[in-house]
Length: 144
View 1: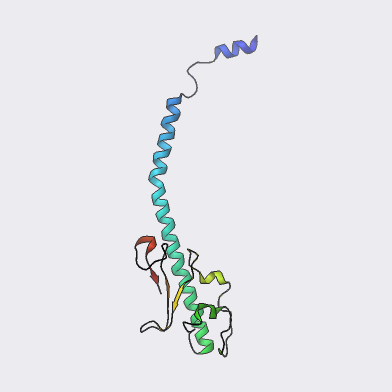
View 2: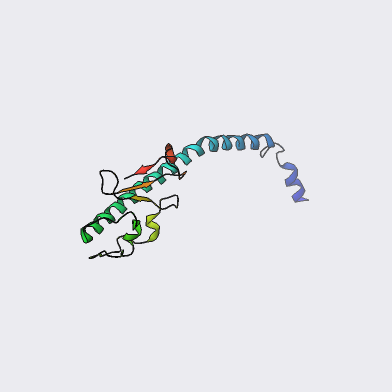
């Protein structure tokens, strides 16, 4: 009897109506819809920045290779010369990078290495998210 009286005394208008719940869900969806593109843009910029930092580390490793051997790795040897001694490389003191994954860009593709590259001794490039030359934003090419 006591339990029934407590139930009867409950305010019938207390709690949330379906309309109120739907309004709150709509507001949450609106906020998520506005924030998600900006978040994804920031994430893309972070990967591009990570690629630049990785390429600077690879450049430093190539410079150490040069100090030890008197030359930069040939294009045929590629960046793998930083991991294992290439044939005929005297005074090789490597490995100059810790792991093979270091030689891949943030999109899990190998960096493109050219030596010589015009007037420079070497060039390291990644084609960005799309993996093709050209592009803008996350798809832009990054060279060092």
